[in-house]
Length: 233
Ligand code: SF4
Image 1 (cartoon, rainbow, N blue to C red):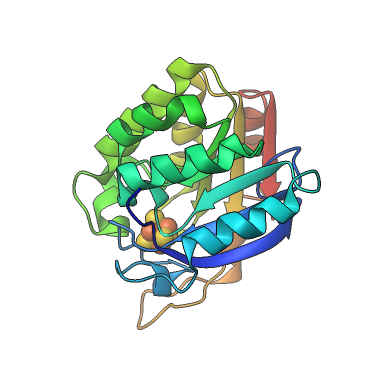
Image 2: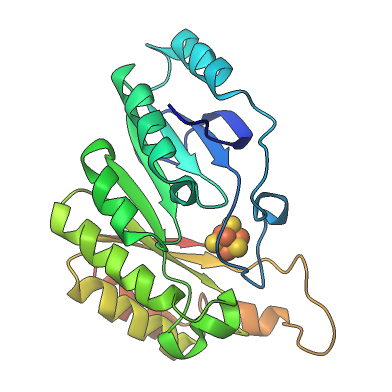
């Protein structure tokens, strides 16, 4: 098995894999360059500081205590077939597999779909703003392909939008929600944008950031589209 590069590990979480007690593994490397990235140390491909075999040994000690393992990043699928092999090893230990993904690798997602129980997919903006936010011109189209790959599996997913008002408007949010619902996804999440790295004149303010959450009409319309909507205010 080729080696995967793991740059971080959370040993216990109740919030990153719905309904499961889980650990989270953060894989090194991401093809996108999102303006608000909160894991910039994981973007550049490189050597992870966690030995993958030792992580598997540690997971053995968690059998019967944890129910799932979340593959996060960075973008775990950037590591190619090696990460699929690693998922299989984790799954063979009896853990459910969750994946947090930006959707950039639809073919990899299709190849790994049988091993994955749930995904959290980032739908970052409308197509118009995707390149400006992520720095990559094909990122939107790749994400939509991934969304459709996963929707076909009929397995559970959460599609989430981080509401950075520099790239997403309340109207955009509704448009995204309608698109996601039309593709058969049942669970949606709206996440407050937290400004960590803003510079220069293009700064947000609390009123701009609250506009998504203080708008009862918008909330009602979005809530009506899905079985669940998490408003992470
Ligand atoms: S997809 Fe995630 S990890 Fe990659 S640059 Fe964007 S926010 Fe950062």
